Every structure is written in C-alpha cells, then in structure tokens.
Image (cartoon, rainbow, N blue to C red; front, side, top):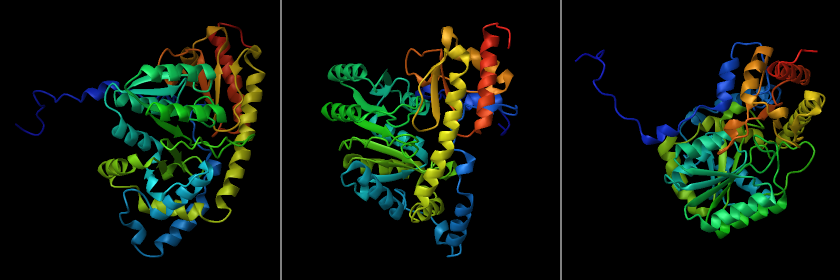
Length: 402
C-alpha cells in the first residue's frame, strides 16, 4: 500500500456530528462575499471603535521588557486580569466574587462549550429564550441536548418554564442573553431576572447569563444581574475593545470552578498570555474603558436611530419591530406572511444582506422574522440598505418599483 492509496473503509464519525449545522450568519456572509453589498447581517463591532494605537503602544511596551510576555501562562487566565474581572463583577452583583470563580476563555463561545462539557449528557434539557442566540443553540445541539424554547421575557413564558421544570427530571441549564439580546435587542427587567434565578435555584438548574452587550446601552442603564449564587455569568472583551482579542470570561459558582479549569487545560492549555496582558493594561488604565464605551455608545446610537427611522418609513409602515435600547440588533417581522429566507435571495440581488430569523428558534421557527444589524455599517449606508431591502420585498411581491 502506498500513501496515495485510498483506504478501503473510512472510520465512522462520532454520533454528535449528526447535530452539526452551518452558522446562519456565516452562510449569509459567504453568500455575499465578493459582492457590493450593504451589510446588515454581521453583528460585529464597528472598526471605528477598535483601539488600534493603544494596542500598538501597549504591545510595544510589553515586548520591550523581554521575552516574558511570550511564554505560556496559567490555563485559568492571567491572575491580574481575573482579579480585575472579579472586582467588576462584585460591583455589578452587589456581592463578593472570588478570583477563583473567574475563568478566561477563547471568547464566549468556548465558555459555552466548556459549560456543556461539564453539565450535559445526551438527552439532558436546556431551556432557552424564544428566539435565542444561534451560536448557543449550535453548541447545545452538538452536545445532544433537548432544547426547549420559551419566551423568557414574559410572565406567561416564565409560568410555562416553571411548569416544565416541575416535571422535567433532566433539566440542567436555563440560558438567557438578558441585556440587549442577540437577536432581539430585548432586555429582561429586574422582576423577570429574579424569577429566572429563583426557578433555577429551586429546581437545581444552572442559570447561564450570557451578557456581552451589557456595557452598550444607549438610552437606559441595564438592570443589575440577579446575583444568584448558582448562576454562571458570561462576558467578553470583543464587543468593547476589538474582536481579535478572542477573550471571554466565565464567572461560575464554586462547584464548577475546578472542573471547568480542568476542561480548559485539556482543550487548549490557556489563552495567549500576551493578549491577556495587553487587555489588562488597557482596561486598568484610568478612564480608558469609560471613554471608549461612551464613544462607542454614541456611534451605535446614531446607527440604531438611522435604521429604525428608515424601517419606520418603509414597507408601507407594516413592518413589525421593536426599538432596542442597546446592543447591535433590530428584530423584525415581515408583513403579509412573507418568508425572510426567500427575501434574502432578492435582497442580495439588490445589494443588501440580513439574517433570516428561522435559525434563532430551537423549535417551530417563524419564517417571517429577520435580524438586522446596525453596528458596523455607516448611517448613510443603512438608509440606502433599507431602501434596497424594501425594493427586494416589492420584487418578491411582484409589485412595480416606485
């Protein structure tokens, strides 16, 4: 047998690969790659908010100290940065958070992966919002969980959650994006946060609060987290510094600290020490983070306003949407029972992109829904993008263009 000979039989893939699905956002981005398209699809931070010069200055200073920043680091994360996160979370929660409860990860997505490794066996139940973050749904399905979606921001939804928890013996996780959510932009109020935390505590579930947009409120201050002792808090530096940091963090109850640290060691032996040191130098600089956040909020508010104003004057005033008070997204529903997936093909022809809403549902998707992102597109381009989107909608309805 030579190395070029094909094997007579390929090895079987693991059963979990049956649950693999392409990213809805990634599919749209590939569809529009190389086209002159106004992007209302990707929920990425605006390049104008990246701290290019500060990053260069800090990196140069660290490297001038010799080779120490280029060595391996603690798998749990840089102790000084974990201490900074613990202090910040203590202030947010109104209770002390120990540094041993903080674990640094390769973005929030790895945090979800580690939690699922620690908590889920095939067939265990995860409760999510309806709709919910598509990246989380992908991970839960990969670990062969049974995912149940309920509208967690309503009293009716929480009543249904309580009824399900009372009979469901394999419930393990309640997952929510509580502040300026992806994809809806909605925020859970204080009463619903407290009730979610109480239900998780009563029925022995882990409440996972994925909170990447918390610092990006434009019109209102986000409610304080519920501060449940058994809750997991997830955050990231990608949205407020720069995405290439790939630096997220978990704040976990003590019973999860050791097992998650061991899973992190097994996964990658830790994040880049240099990147952690750069981020720590940046965030602990007096006034740096507050100033950067204020500039980002001003930029995103302007782009949000451009999008909602354009939407309100389009689609014959029949497009249903809520105005978000922070974050990156507007969640909308097309009039007349139109299918957003069908609209996407016509929209790309017109030169605008968005993400159809179907993949954000764990069950029974609403085909008329769509997610529009305003974060990384200029206000004037957003207005033109909505005009193109309306033209695509009229084309889909076989209407003459104005």
